[in-house]
Image 1 (cartoon, one colour):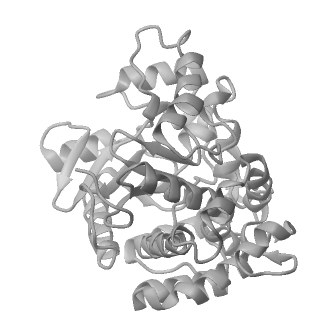
Image 2: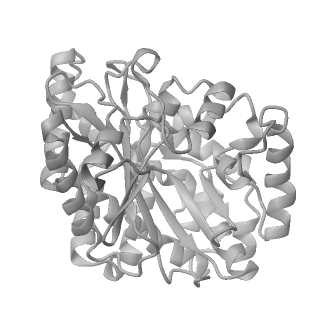
Length: 406
């Protein structure tokens, strides 16, 4: 069934499993799913929420079971599922850890690919790209799926999403530590994402999608080059172009939705769903041409948007944006940091957010992105002991569905 703009939403959250005793990743999602279901299956329907496996054996995804029109109580549903998963994992000395990266994981020695359903697809990916790296096995995110009904709605939504993508990491960055040290990027997940598929660059493009605003054009300019580039590797034709498209927002014409992928997972579902609701409201402003006309949105080349994005993944909300044309979209007439852009958007849409969502966004705008708060809490002490201490507190925030304070 096709839905109209902002009629329904699909939210997906990824979490890693870690051992309580030594804080190493715990590749036992198959045991979790078996314990819940009685036998191993890659997807489990749990009422309005669904659980499923991912590429690697230590990451589980929980998502809305089909489209939902209610973002209001979604965080509670997710939080209940987190608690249930943690209870099931207890006997395996394991629990869920939020945040987009494991700060101490060694992907070369600790990565185990999913060996069950879809393993043929994952195996092919591994042969092409070598998935034993941070960009494949140590990246957890939230995806937001937004519907469009036809080409006209796709044009508006795709134009709006492209405009907003560069500054989203300024709100949601949560991956500053890899290999036991600060990487210099607050959103290291997206830094890896840029070059993760360098063997076939057509798959990721410039992360920000090209200026394509119809289904026909999208197939011609994005899907066809991907299909052509993958052909020498995918000799059995088992990979689908929707599956292969790895831009920061991908257009799923098989289900008439755009999936936003540049959002790091937060410390709890309340923060994730609040960010999703905020992004949705910001997109409504753009789609309604309240900030800038559709024609002006469509004029933005992906290279210019990527330039802003590439700086934002480094400094998140503290990034200074100097592109005056971009700032003018948000009625800002001089160089401003990304936090100021989000505060401006918040002032325009706050009344459309529930009190709960508003409270969580206010917390983030006041205290900084999760990446900023993690670095503050570490206080420049990157000893293994201190990292485990700080990240264990993140795990407690997920368990209790509360915000992380440095």
